[in-house]
Image 1 (cartoon, rainbow, N blue to C red):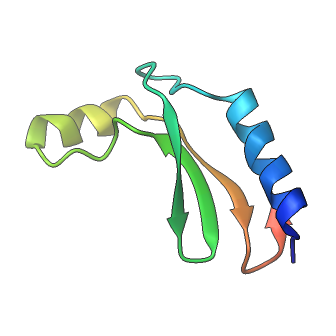
Image 2 (image 1 turned 90 degrees about the vertical axis):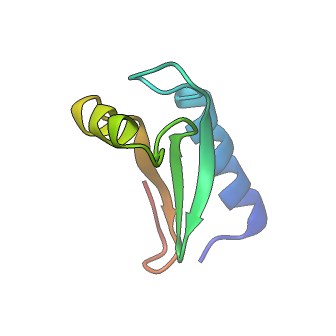
Image 3 (image 1 turned 180 degrees about the vertical axis):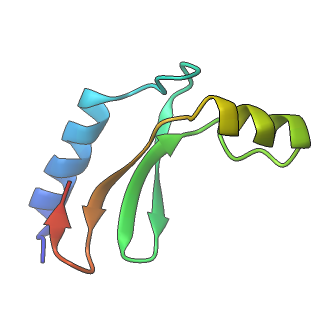
Length: 74
């Protein structure tokens, strides 16, 4: 399990390493997915059919930062 200082350090390091999406250049944002903290492109995940096709063809940044269920940091 992580204490707050360690978790914030891991998150800050993830933002420093990849502040923008590799595919489109949009800023990355954190998202909580259950017990996981994910850094992903803020422009991905639209609802239109063309947006979903573009997201499939050009994968936006999406990476695991912390997995609290296993106590592992990526």
